[in-house]
Length: 328
Image (cartoon, rainbow, N blue to C red; front, side):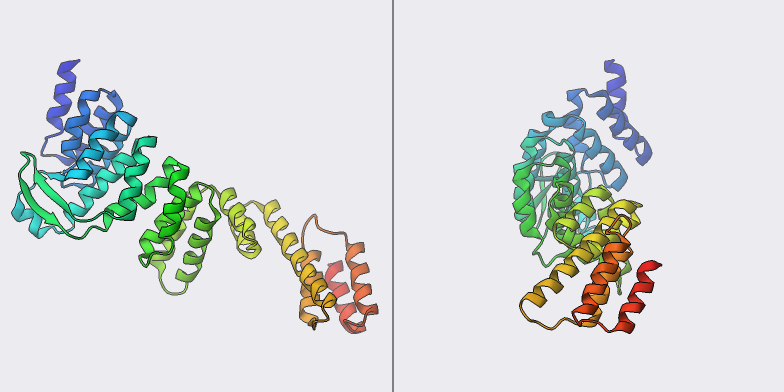
């Protein structure tokens, strides 16, 4: 058994990216806690896919990996690259630190929540060390790690993260906003869903990349939860559109019904207060309900139409036009 374990550790140092990645996955699957330390050291790998495999592997150890990962975050990052290479790869330390955050979040352990919230709020300058512990440089800017924390906290689902994530919705950084929104959506918070839908619709005009990003994040949330969140906010148009795209046609019809009922209620309030009611509002209210499957009966709709004519809100010709629409 030790022979196989040692072989995997050796492969973690291979010159081939695929070999290093496979070794990390095998170590994670084996659940041998002796692998935690070498995996953490290997998080400084220069290859994105290898780091992703290592972050996944460390997550498989759950709570046992939390403390050493938090210590690493507090210290900085450990890299296998020389300083000259680091200076030419300014993005690399950011990506490595982001991988540490993802490994911590992948544990899905409750003890990972507070450190992730701390990074979410303010992850200041961090130090880069080589594997011998020698300081190589200090990174003043750090944007990747907070964005990763915002994206990953939702998968843990701890309520302590809700309000810190909600604060991020006011950020000027749109990547932070949509990542936090997705996490909130995964935890059933309607504010996150509303933010994602708003960003998605705004990006449809002239920003295909951001639109696709928002769509991807919305797809991480169960469709019924997206629709339910929009429904809670009484955004029935958006909810209907989302339920329809998810082939939840009965729920889409229910949104049309609620939209029609809301329109009728607004008209009633205007009449009570003596406010002017436009003919368009009346027509929309009646016809919206006529197209809702499972809604009020045609007889009831025709009765309401006759009452509107008798009250002088619509002319005879308008009543006949709307009657034909209802009977369709």
